[in-house]
Amino acid sequence: MLDLHMPSGGEVRRLAEVAKLNKLLLAYLRRVGDALRDELVCEEARYRWFMRNAVDVVDALSRAGVGYALHKFRKPLDHVSVDLDVLVRADDAPRAVKALVRRGFGVAVSEPYTVTLVRRGFIVDLYANPSFAWVVYMDGEGILRCCVEEVEVGGVRATALTRGAEVAVAAAHAVYREHAVLLMDCLVAWSWMSGEAWGVAVEHRVEGALEALLGACSLIGEGYAEAPRRLGPHAVLGALARKVVRDPLLRGTLPNALRYLARGDVGRRVLARLTRWSY
Image (cartoon, rainbow, N blue to C red; front, side):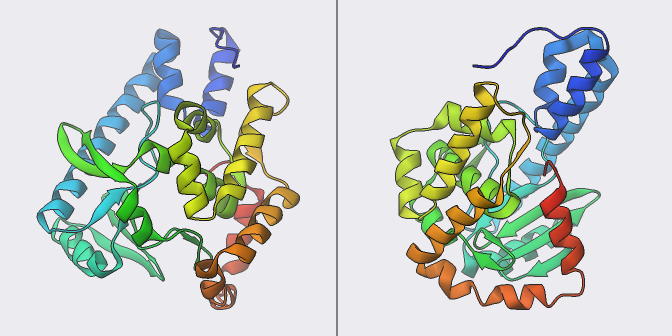
């Protein structure tokens, strides 16, 4: 589906920028090798740094007895994320925060359903529920009950979402929250789409988002669209309308959006989300 030819000349660096936007920079640099050797060395160092920090977070949460799962973490290819997303049981969230504070993290932002902590540039987002504008679009407790498994992270055991759940979560995040599809999102779907993925999407009423993601990825894969791909209002609003009708959890938290919109910086936040090409 994708043209995997080896780039050359100035194309190598131009495509590196595209790969970065699509969360594929490390994989791309590994492929081109010596053509961008300095950049590869730097990105490999960032990857090791990210994984060391991830292992420390996993250790802290495990020792504290927190019910958690690494969220939007597993990908078909190694990559360096901008942050570490962790889904935690709502009742365990205070204990999770305390455990990370003891490891040197500081609370940067505390919002409904999410707490962001930072330590020397490493960002951890603790989610009780996946949400946008303080509106819940997936039930965190439900995901933790049905859709987690043990994995290895940096040589230690950790709990993460199943691959099928990652497909559903990636679709919901891309459509409801980001309104954009990255090539990494497509690789997740192309690699791990299954009956389980569809079942998770149906159970959490995000099948509209999954259909929108698969549609965008089909266009990208066939060469009719480029990635990242901004989703049009019709696709986003259509998926949201379908979810509002069928999801009592989203409807119950929808009034929170009014509080979110009352914030002084909301205009800047909304404009940035609607105009950026990646996330």
